[in-house]
Length: 158
Image (cartoon, rainbow, N blue to C red; front, side, top):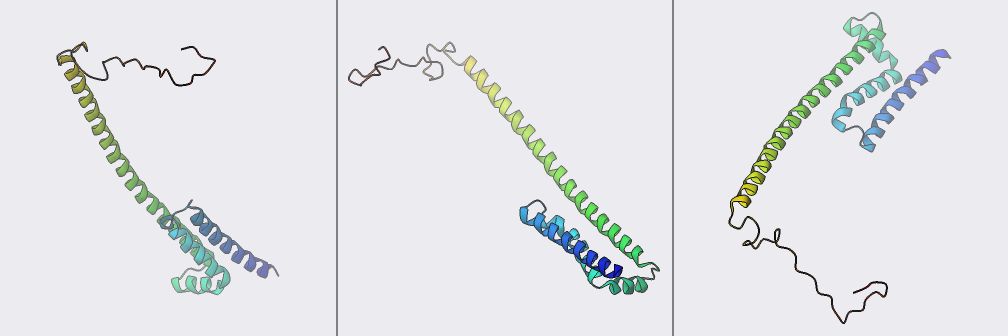
């Protein structure tokens, strides 16, 4: 009875892992490219749980005396592949971040240069005091005349 319970527990655990991976992918928490090795591990766990003789056969074929050592070896191998994939992804992200930071620095420098040139041009232009220039920035706004015929709010004065 214990071997049946262990057998069913192995199947249930493998199915739960696969369901969790699929659910994370469905929610968008885990991308497909990151889920690849986790899916491989979950499917291998399910195959071994359903057909335990496959583990014995594979370990005998590879010359591994204790079948559980093959599971540890495969698990370590899968974790190594996941780590390698994340390392490559991190390298790409760092390169992209460095490129974006450089572009931002260049754009910031360009903006400061253009603002300085504009300020210098405004200072050296004739009529820098605003008297001879017709700029909307330096010219005071014309007063708005009220419409005499328009109804007014009784609580305000004209």
